[in-house]
Length: 171
Image (cartoon, rainbow, N blue to C red; front, side):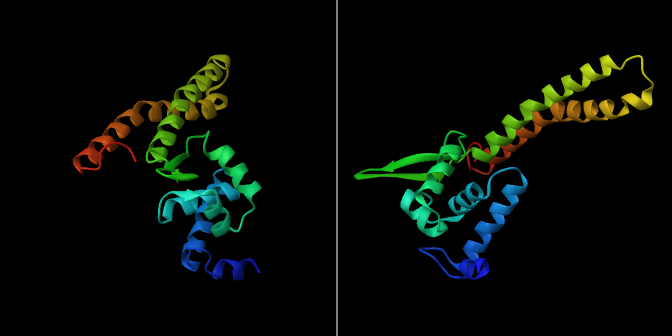
């Protein structure tokens, strides 16, 4: 039944697009996002026009208005999706924020120092213990210290390459 529903084109979406939306949803679900948020985000990544109204989202995703409302109560404050308006149109539209992926990855990288510091405290706690007991913490600390040291250069390189390509800042 579900496969049949995905195979039937809906309100501006082809069967292939709906399959892609479901792939995105499943991938994001594996990362901890609930599936309807992943579907919504998947559709917003490929839809045309890039801004979709509440009603358009509910129709193409075959979701209740309550479900779309719950999704937007998560995605908008999380700054993954933004609300936009069109001149002369009272409806609210939603779209992926252009810099969402860059900002999410950059913000996540702020946690690298916290995890390194946590591992350092654990190593201090076990300072008089055998090296074998401390190895797991040392491995954690070394990895997060490396990320903490290397990621700023990676972000700078990404931004520089985007500017050289004429695409401006993060997208």
